[in-house]
Image (cartoon, rainbow, N blue to C red; front, side, top):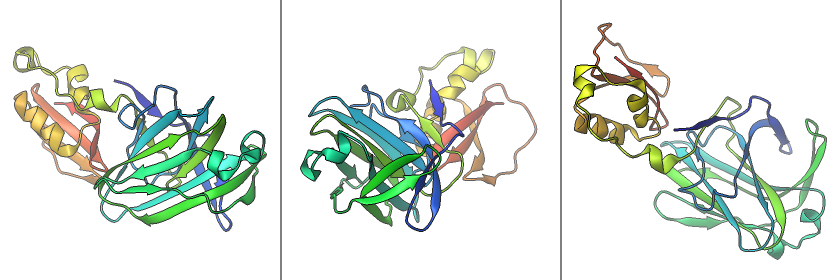
Amino acid sequence: MRFLISSLIAVSLLSTSTAVAHQPLILLQSDTTAAKGPLLVDGTISFAVRASFTKTGQTQALRAQFKVGDQLALQYLIVDKKPENSLKSNQLPVVVITAPSGKKITMKINERTKFFEPYSQTNYFYLARFNGPAEEGIYKVSITSKAKSSITLAIGEKEIRGQVVRDYESLTKCPSAATSDASSGITQLRANALIGMSEAAAENCANQLNWLYRIAERDEEMFMLTKDYRINRVTVYIKAGLVTKVDVG
């Protein structure tokens, strides 16, 4: 199970009126579908997602989690240099946003607004922006190339440290039952299998394994817990509907 905690050294992306610090996230060639790509645990936290392509027809993708009342903020940018700045709009990658309900939104390139990013001394162009109420659940964002090119997607607006989960599909699989859980105790490695699961899936998995289960924190709200230690109990921490940490006991 692997976690990618984004760097604290932010890439600053400036809008026309405010400065927003975005944490860098580079998509990999293996991120060909949203299921294979990274998951942003909280889609309202700012990330600068970089996608690079060597030829036409390549796809890179990711997921982002949202709660009720969240805003989905997404900007499409390119660096002001060749080949990107010489490509026509119909030659640039296509970005498609798929909501939890299945509704699809294709970002339409409708501007070419310059701005200078002082942190990296880089000139960019804004090409498209989307901002609106988010549905509860996990959004999929896919980027498909039409030529050799690279783009940046700025996601989220909160300037706080964010968390990215990779190998998301494998994280959602409940481990097999083991008699040692009750006799010698749940190991931390087995307990960590809950990380990345939804709150409901984690509780269901714990029940299947006959683990005692309790929640210590949900979205920064702390819950009162007993101080006794139980070798067959897991204590979980929830953020944006997903388990982000598990303690044994």
